[in-house]
Image (tube, rainbow, N blue to C red; front, top):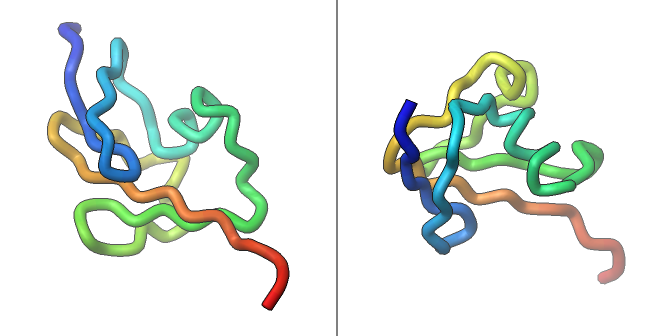
Length: 69
């Protein structure tokens, strides 16, 4: 497969292999706890992270909960 580009938190990132959203978190060394993933403007349910494949041009926002107030 050829490389493809996606946008993660507003930055263009080149991926070298097909990944699920869950695999993307592992690649980025992001723990799942306290994390939400938005995909192309909508929330990607946690139950779909390990099945949903990231595709060319996807816009992904990874948001982590912050403590405090």
